[in-house]
Amino acid sequence: MNHVHSSISSVSTDTKGLKKIQRPLVILPTFNEVENIFQILEAIEELPVRISVLVVDDSSPDGTAEMVTNHPSFDKNIFLLKRPMKSGLGSAYREGFQWALKNGYDVCLQMDSDFSHNPNDIPRLLKAVSDGADIAIGSRYLNGISVVNWPLHRLFLSLWAGAYTRFLTGMPFSDPTAGFSAIHRKVLKKLVNHNISSDGYGFLIETKYFAWKDGFSIKELPIVFTERRDGQSKLNFSIKVQSAIRVIQLGLGRIWDLNAHKERVPTNCPLYDFTFGENPHHIQSLTAEHRKERTERLIMSLSHDERS
Image 1 (cartoon, rainbow, N blue to C red):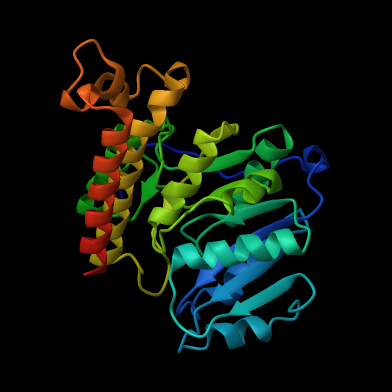
Image 2 (spheres, one colour; image 1 turned 60 degrees about the vertical axis):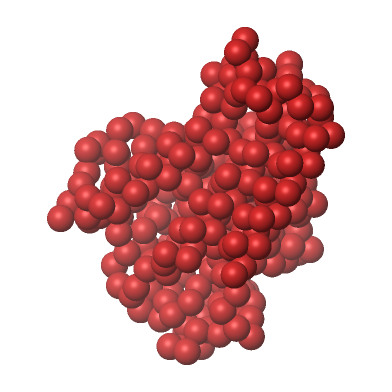
């Protein structure tokens, strides 16, 4: 079943506008992507922009890593980090970011390796960063709904997750759970110092949240998201629960943290009324110390439940 409610063509971007970006790197976390990995590497290589690729593979038993090492461009502009066990999307990106910083790349791109994200959109994201954005997000919902081959229940879940995340964190983005983005090096250097704890898809939310909270410029661009061509999705119930809990933790953290920075809080943020409104809830009558203590206790409880 197809659910496409807007039409956006992925067209080539004028590469002359990318001169400010000297060394872009695509990070591809993989687990059992042997059916897609060679083709996605080929598609990236065919772009009009020279881009390096780092595949972070969790010891896929299907031979994904071997497919990467057999590529003609391996160790030239295609590289591999093979990890000893399945460790999750978030930790793959954390290691990828550190590798990128160590090796002097100036922009990192997050994307799926299964063609859900169109490689032809990469130059558009890079152009946005070259033009001044610190992060460029490929949004599925900026111009209506732009999703192909999703069943209705998955579409509703995605829309609900976005609304849930916006409500609790205050982020203004149309697609805060998006997995396709370009991130400038200066943002990466700041992000690696944050306690980004999610190992699943919550990591994608956390990177946007902390970058937004730190005042970086974030621009959304419309893309069309297409359900994977081959293989199986890695999004399971456990990952969804972990991400939902982490969003609650981020939202609760803002309640006491933003008290010290009231002038920076957007008044359209749902947590503004809860924390600073004319008719504040009971939490507003607590001292900052008690408020922080209660929040930390609840976060510890949520984290304990998540590990159990």
